[in-house]
Length: 185
Ligand SMILES: [Cu+2]
Image 1 (spheres, rainbow, N blue to C red):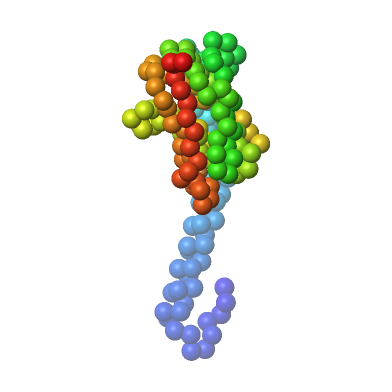
Image 2: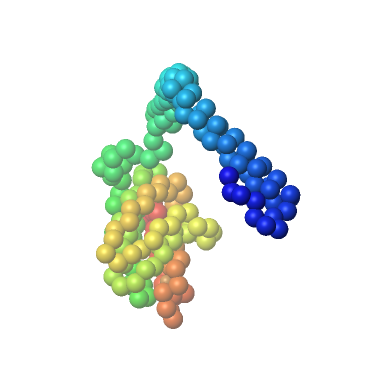
C-alpha cells in the first residue's frame, strides 16, 4: 500500500481502497467464471444438441412443404414444353423490321390454327405489334437485331390485321405499318 502522501485527503484514501476492492471483486468474478467454465460447456453442449435436432426437424418440414409446393406448381406448364410441339401445328410467319417498314412472309394466315411469328430486325429495335381490324392490340413482341423472338397467336376471326411499330425508332416510326390477312382469298 502506498504511504499516504502529505496533503492526501481522506477522500482520496477512501477512493483508493474502494478501487482496490472493486478490482478484487472483478478478479474474483473472472476466477469464478474460469472455475465453472467446464460445467457451462457441458450445459451448452446439451443446448446445442437440442438446437441441432430442432433445426434438422425444421429442415425436413420445410423441405416437405416447399418440395410439394414446387411439384404442385410445376405440374402444368402454361406454355408448350417444347417449341417444336407448338411449332409442328403452327403456321410460321417470318417478320423483319427495317427503318421504316416490315417484311412479312407470308402475309396471309388461316384462322383457328396457331401462328408462330419469328420476329427480328435488320437495324435497330422495333416493336412488333399486331392489331385486329378494330385496331385493338392482340399480341406484341420486341423486334431486335441479332435475335429472333418467337410469339404465338391463334387468330379466331378473319379480317385484315395491322402490324404497327411499338417502339419509337426514328422520324418515320409512325409510318412503319404492314398488313396481315387472316382467312379469305
Ligand atoms: Cu418504330
